[in-house]
Length: 398
Image 1 (cartoon, rainbow, N blue to C red):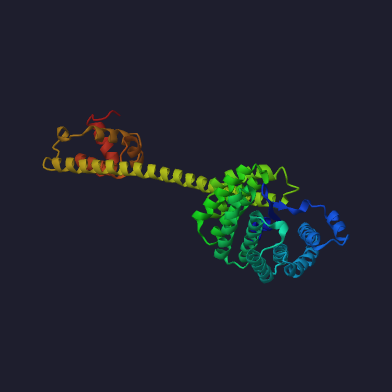
Image 2: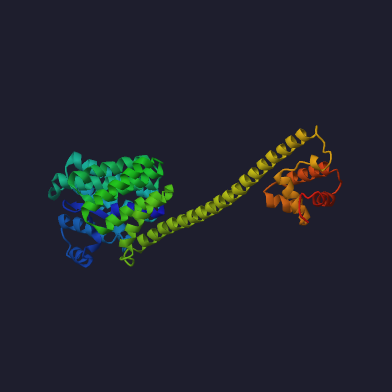
């Protein structure tokens, strides 16, 4: 969850107090000027808005000072009916305590902020903020803060409900930057509750809206989030395109966005590890396939040889059976086929059964059958005698 907090906290740091920009980044405020205003002992109508701006500006640089100022807003503004400023103070305290890891206190002040808003709707609020935009700003920011608080409590369904409420305001006022960020948060939460279809849809929507903002950082963040989602799902090919695109931004702004750069490198490492693993698997599979093909080739060759040997053996038996009724009587009675003559000739050259089998493409057993037949036909007991008789009878030349 820590890796995703960067996005969640952005919603708290950016506050939609300007209609054309959505959440405003308070880090660019001139804090010295605000402190100077406080030293003039201004009236409530200037004091408390200044306290709110100063507290917002110090949230990142001096969170303890922010908490002191925010507590003043929460305690001093309600009696004066500065309810939206009190709600702002409660939001700042919620963010502060969330940053300190005090999640129960963070949720408590987020709820308090919502209560101040409801009271403002019922009773009215400070005259300088009597417009619907101010209420919408406060409502969306408080809903975002409540969503953040419930995320830390791991009550994701409740967090989704509050994010959707804030999203309605963002889309109504066309606050594209905030809308993109919030769709990214929804994608993260849907991922957490294992609704992967809605998670993917939310991430894609975040990217689509980010493209409309022309803000490179927001677009890079949206692309990285979807890339990380695909990495977690094992869809590395899809992830690569989004992570690589995000890296094009973060690699150029490594000093300012070093945490984002780290996330990009982690995602790219996961993709590269998978590609290396896939390459090893494919290489091993190819090797196994080649070995299996070689084994299959020799098996088929052996089967063909054995089949041929079996056919030759059957032929020898058939020839033998045909010749048994007519035993040889004298020289003219010996009938030899071409293969038998070849075998006698090879025997005369000193070849053994294995060599003869190799030459004639027969099995060794088939050659042995032929040699036994020759012994029977010539009426002798050795192959040497067969050769001698064949020479004597002029069957082969000496």
